[in-house]
Length: 493
Ligand code: F6P
Image 1 (cartoon, rainbow, N blue to C red):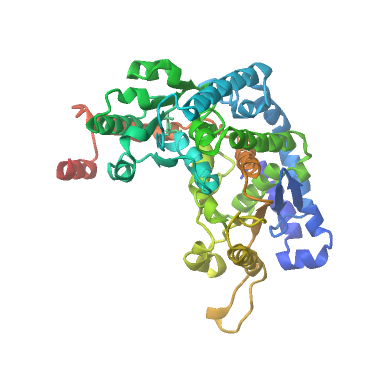
Image 2: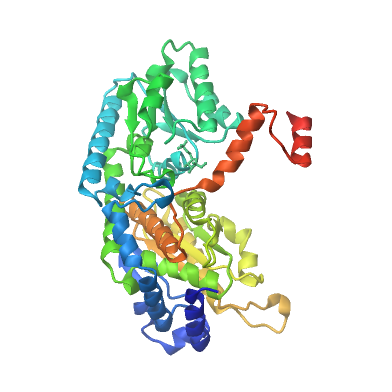
């Protein structure tokens, strides 16, 4: 057990009360535990945080030099120590070392010029965008376009990541090759899935009689030479710095399909919202700092209450891809060993659907799962507000039920209650608020890592499986596989 654990548990044991008792005993609880920032309202009052815990968090933050680590991040120091480089996604939104911000601005201008040229017809008429990438080169653009691009979309957009050929069937059937722009997005420009999907898409263009398929391709990568060697004209290669990690990259040229599909102004608003959250994280005191409090809530439930997971439920159809986006952001960043326990597993789904599928376990199961609700106060444009009202009512009712529970002599109908949740309420789901929300999650991930003593910016854990897959594909003699894997290969390959 680390010093952190001991400290928290001492405070917690001394002061542990139910959520209901905490509300009863403290009329200022809502004031203490709500934060309004960058269009977002954070409500931590339905967690077991109290003044004593917040104070001990401050001590933990100081002991782990959280302020020093945060400042090093923003200054562009080599915080990704295992790879010897900085983590400069904030520079993409104007926050960070001046030379990195200048480079980000220059690369954005280059991207904007290509967006403008395409809109002006430089590549002929474009109706469809087929974006090929995986992990951080797909999840961000796919999520943001799905969230914000529903009203009168300028283009049909499909994001294909899976190497399963079935994933390409939809766009190949629905899109007209003559009017399709291919975007090949890969930081390394070597990822096997993306490269095979790119080859298949190029073949699809060729089969449709397109004479110069490469003339319809834009590449987005941190290794522009590879993209040029692949055959893409350098005027359509959009680089980004290798100090921008894959799962932090939607703000960079990886956001090209966002800028094209939603328009440049929306992309800029996304960056602005994120920058507002960057400033909040940099300047607010710990007790009023939303990413810091959220990270501490996660660590508290993991370390003091033994919660292994956190569940995320956006009550908004447009945010249905938030859980998979967060899974990569948080689990690829912090899914690493630490002697100070570990970051929670993130799972979730969209409300209200999830309510009718997994909420039974949250209300009456034996796991303590801190829940996170995300919703937008304002209704969608052009849609019947009655639906939005129902959505929000359901969201707030679930949080209230988790907290209050209901006693019954019948054990089947007894709800224990006292189950924690956090609510993040957006003013409205627009590019600014969404940018702020995503930057909030990035910084929360960073704070968790800083306290756990983890480098959140590498991902060596994904390498071994890739290496074995390559060896199997190359039929390497020296490959010593376990008997069960060998039997599967013999049956299926
Ligand atoms: O396998 C993990 C990973 O490296 C992610 O970190 C990354 O987002 C994804 O693969 C895609 O990598 P690339 O952008 O280099 O194709």
